[in-house]
Image (cartoon, rainbow, N blue to C red; front, side, top):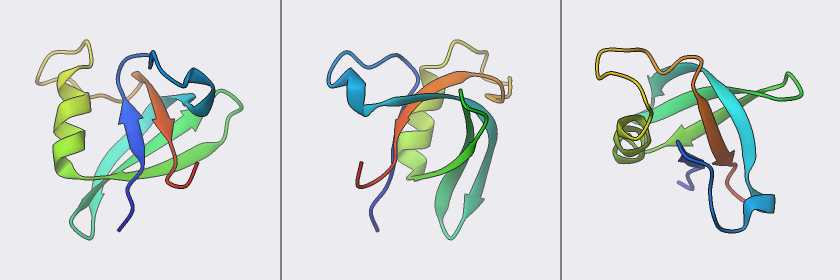
Length: 81
C-alpha cells in the first residue's frame, strides 16, 4: 500500500510540492493511521500513514504528550503527488 506523507514542521525541500492544513481528527483503519486535515480552502483531506510515521510527526508537534493534535498545523503530500 502506498502511504501519504505528513510533516509537523514546514518542509525545507520542494516546498511547492507540499500542502498545508490543520488536523481535524486522528484515527485508525485497517491497521493504518488515518489523519483528517482541513485545507486552507476549507476542504477535508484524508491522509493514510503508518503508525511509525504517526508517532514521528506527533512527537515533533509542539504539544504535551497527553494533548490532542487536533487543531495543529501540518504539511502533507497525498500519495502520487
